Image (cartoon, rainbow, N blue to C red; front, side, top):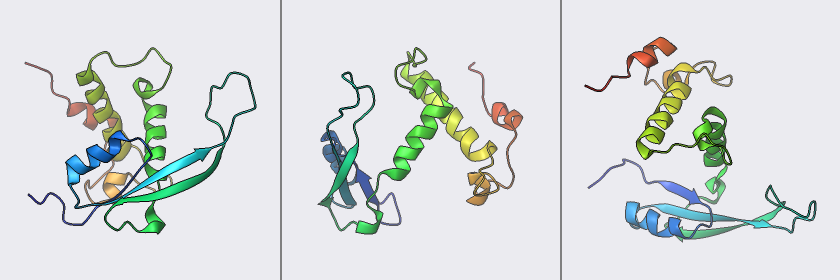
Length: 152
């Protein structure tokens, strides 16, 4: 079954479980690259809290023919940072985590809907939804809350 019109290029980091997950989701119908960061020793403190300095990267083609100019994890890393900054449930080492996966899914949907439909982005001068033609105006928080239905 065809799910996408265009062929997908995907870059993941070196986590081994991604290889099986990508294959299960796309088979060999994807351009998949793996970007592995090479870290140096951290000598700043005896107890390491943040990751050491990145000395370089190694790019590996896993499947298909990914364009080397687009092998990057920067966009998804920025997306993860945005999520952690907007939603405490996604922040490490806090007590704001979700105890139920359903609550986490609902909060994630709420944050990304606000981010895309209500929040004006400085570089776009409008919301991403308006820029993409998905919405015809910037939503208010009241409009967003109005979408929430109460269980019967």
